[in-house]
Each structure stands twice: as structure tokens, then as C-alpha cells.
Length: 134
Image 1 (tube, helix red, strand yellow):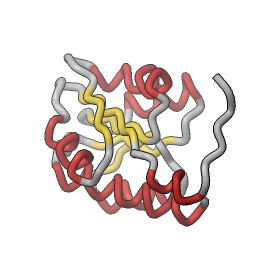
Image 2 (image 1 turned 90 degrees about the horizontal axis):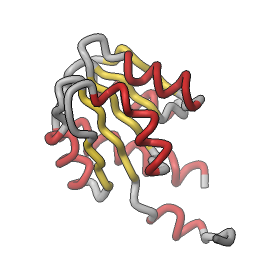
Image 3 (image 1 turned 30 degrees about the horizontal axis):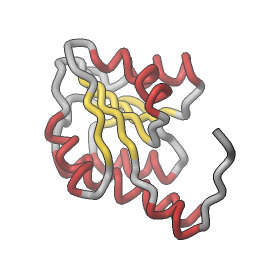
């Protein structure tokens, strides 16, 4: 595998890869929003999927990871501790997630918020942030 050089235009068009880990094994609605915004959603199957978030993000070389649990923190904190990802947890609104992305966080911990709008707006925020820093 050699190094690949990409132009600014190519890097902006790269599909955003988002891993979703939900304590209750859900995440399909936020995945639909991610895909509607042109992203690629990877939903970790099964109960306690939030605790596998960092591992799957690392394996898939994901751009963003979303953890859902009651406190909005366990999976995000685990991913941060194990892999050093910048994380924000305990979030309860879409706007908090957008702000976290603007502030360079890539692991986002929410309470249970499996909503398509969340996925769509986070992908748009990430694309905007990436285009500003490219």
C-alpha cells in the first residue's frame, strides 16, 4: 500500500464514515439520516454495542463515532481512553453534537437519540468542518 495524494476537491468528496454503537442495539434511524446525507453508516449489532465503538471505528478507519446510552458517555469515554479519539459525551441535543464536531471531536456520546435528523446534521457539520480545514 502506497501513499495516495488527494486534491482538495477529492478530499471534500470522500464519503464520511460513521460508526454507531447503541447500548440497546438500535441506531437504524440515525443510520438512515447519515446515508441520506451521503455518508456511510456502520451500525454495530447487539446489546452493549456502544462499548465496541472505539474498536469498530479503529477497524473501519471511521471519521465519526456515535455512542448512545442512558448517560451518553460510556462508549465515548471508552473509545477516547483506548484509542485517544477526541470525544464529547453527555450530549442531549443535535446542536451539541454539531458544536462538538466544530470543536474537532470525532466521538460523540448522546443519551438515547436514535433520530434520522441527528445523523443527517452531523454528517453535514463534518463535511463543512472538513472543507474549512482542507
